[in-house]
Image 1: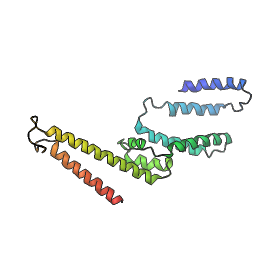
Image 2 (image 1 turned 90 degrees about the vertical axis):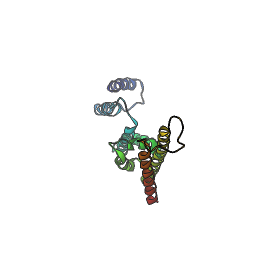
Image 3 (image 1 turned 135 degrees about the vertical axis):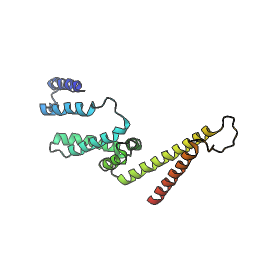
Image 4 (image 1 turned 120 degrees about the vertical axis):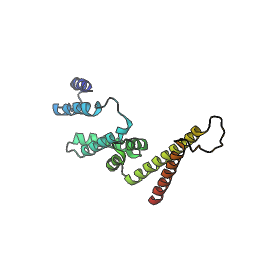
Length: 193
């Protein structure tokens, strides 16, 4: 990425020679900023994963918010235009991005609580929507898991009816735990209403 920044640096002076309306050739300090962005932000990770998107969106939003307050008219105008597009893009709640971060054991709910106030205007509504979706996903997972446990517990000859074998180590314990979780989810949802 740094080599791309250096190539652009060469292109800008050549462009300025041929284009009479081109008035702003970046100075050395501005090129240092470009190189820093290319080195530290864009190329920092070769394999970005979805659990990191939320914190990166937070960093971009925070940077744009600060840039929009710049005393430099050129930078403030440029950043304001970018910020409007970025805010429009993030205006709708990105559930998948939030859940991916939430499922990262390093972050859990704390990253959402930290980043949402900067990224979104309707923080509480978005957090509730995310929690609801997460509970629904978990309930669906439990149903699928319970069905697979019951199927695995069935005798090979098909005898024994629909009852889960009590000797199966997964069957009764996991089902009981699943019921406990469902009750906890129901209680949490009831207390929130």
